[in-house]
Amino acid sequence: MGDECCVIKAELLISLRMSLTVSLLFLLCISGVVAQDGWAVNYNSKSVCALKGSALTMECTYTYPSGHSVQKAFWTKELNTSGSEPPDLSDDPEYRGRVQYLGDEHSDCTLRFKNMREKDQSKYYFTFITNQTGGKYQGEGGVDLSVTDLQVDVPERVIEEHKVTLTCKTTCSLTVRPTFTWYRNGHRLSSSTGQLHLQPVSSDNKDRYHCAVLGLNSPEVTLNVRYGPKSVSVSISPSGKIVEGSSVNLTCSSDANPPVQNYTWFKGTSLVEKTKTYTMNKISSVDSGEYKCRSSNEHGEKLSEALTLNVLYPPKNVSVSSNTTADGKSEILTCSSDANPPVQNYTWCKEGGSSPVGSGHSYRALQSGSYYCVAQNEHGSQKSAAVTVEVTPTNVTMIVVAVIAVLVALSCIIFFVWKCKKPSSLTAPIAVPTDEKPDNGLRDRTALRHRPMGVLTDGE
View 1 (cartoon, rainbow, N blue to C red):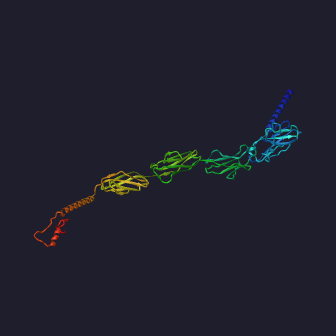
View 2: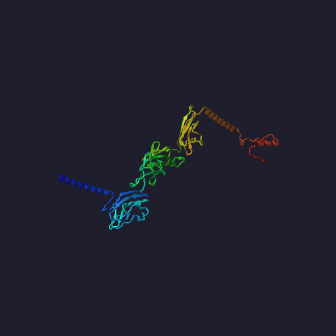
């Protein structure tokens, strides 16, 4: 029984030793130590990350068998596979003056970088050479160095009235825990974390933001705030008076981000067009009215104020209406028309007449006949159809007509009587006495008085 217990104890001790050996080997592997008969390099970090322009220290330690003395210790970017000595990093012109070996020739192999450049990103190996034959060793695995910029990460969609978080980020996790500083328009803010929280933003936010770590600044960013249409307005061209028959363009404008995707035109409450510019060719009076434009994008829509379109045109649909007076002795004629601006002049005419008989919106017709009106404004004129009216003559009119008729008749009678009583000079007899012989002078005068005109006597 005692022998069995001893066997079990021995087996347990062997298992425990194997477990410890495996654990130790695992720890050595994860710490970067590769031991070969006393040869080892321990990289504190297998990968490091640094900001472009910053400084970085890569720490490591190394060991070698007793009896060896280190003659040369250096870092290189070249993995030694050929057995020849790789190039020393400090001899490379690209690194000269920017790398410093802080280690020694005993156990410390620390390297410091200054003013990191993007092309410094690579894998680096520590190598040392002793005074013994075959005393050359390079730490396996090396150290992966990543070089990154600072960038301010802005959400892909920043919407008006929403909260926004800005993040100061790098492409790799910085080896040195950073302290962040935020700036707005060049002025330092109180936030010291990797994120900056902004209250609901507005569309007019034009501020510039950047972050900094260890005095190194990220590029500035501005917010691209998205918002629905605002400041929607309507313009008209050409400007000035709009006359019937001309062409007119109505254009809708608005401020929106992203730009407006849909425009809709309304006349009153009726939809008339879906385009940014609404063109009306040969505009007519029926196109007069109020027009509005609705602008919309994915974040909302807005309606413009109304634009009143006032189309000017000459008189049309001119007509005459009549209304008999209570005594039936005249007709009141009224001229109506559609015009813009309203009719400025009405002229009344009687068919068969050579000149106008009146003017004004209304006309009193005292005589029967056919009348029409001509309506006119600054853009033209139009004549109405004729209206025939029958007017009953008044007593005064009848008396005047009768008096005129009597006077005409009397004038005719007087003229006829005068014509009948007038003697004819061509048939009057010549008085020549036979018994008496008056003196020559009297005879001569009598003969002259009764002689037909144009008859000459002897001796004359």
